[in-house]
Image (cartoon, rainbow, N blue to C red):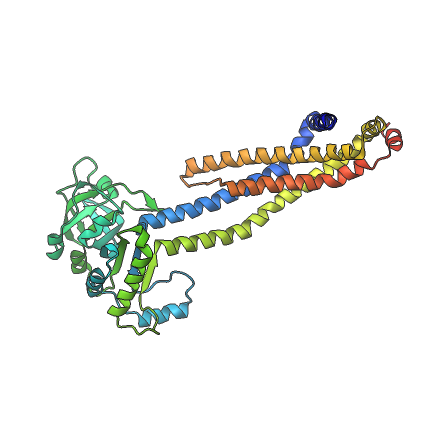
Length: 415
């Protein structure tokens, strides 16, 4: 047993020595493996990062454990003809739907209604284009999607009386009131003056769009300014995450009752949840990975071919050495193991360097572009495992060729 361990250590030493003697050639050989592993890990990190980013943005937009009811939705695979049919069939959602849903959805903690549009806002002689005007009910503050850091949110009484009050985002504060308290000031939308009563926390961007160029006003005020003949959106949140599915069922049943739908009739409204969107994102990420990753793995195969080529050259160059070793008693399997270990070591080193390179690139991208890059264990195992397997397979033929050399012919040819 000790003899075999000694032989194994000697074989490993010889393999490492051969790699170290030809450092430049070894490095150039490993470039294919390095770039292959790096590309697989970076692509995987990008896919995982994009998946996480979209899910975070969806949660920020809709809120966790939440649903949204709309007149119709193109969520999922909906053809143009089906969509046109929904436009014809589905009625506008009205405040009566909101009241009915509040009455019958016992698993809902909050149910709100909202409308939105983009308008140019004015204040202090300046203007800010593309401001998102959100008309909503007073309890929207309890959904937990945002916080008021100065002042307050509008009250139920202000909503009932259609008061011209507004809670503004940080972009409006920076543009109109950079050095003064915005609470109590006035802004204008469509020549309608609105008194600022609150300032929202800074929320950053969502899919590249600023979430701070935003104004919340009472839904009744919004309908008074922009018209009431529009379908509202209804949002709800589960009182308990464990009862999210029950809440979704209650919301669907309540809307079907309210719209007097028969059991065999399809829903005439769109019901979207964060879980549904996240599931769709997961499926899309899996499809992208199944298409992109095999393409990046091709570079690992190319790297393996390069390793095989170099190992064949190495066998030719070291014919005399092989002949001497076999003449001194080395067995075929010892020669076979030596070249297999050598090719595996090269692939393993290339995989490690590629992994370190990919990690560095992922960190650089995440810090410079503020885009999440998740180097997941699954992609690391895939890249390093494939690279090691490719290295091992690539060394089989050269190792087998070396082990079959006749010692006398090898020594005579290697002189």
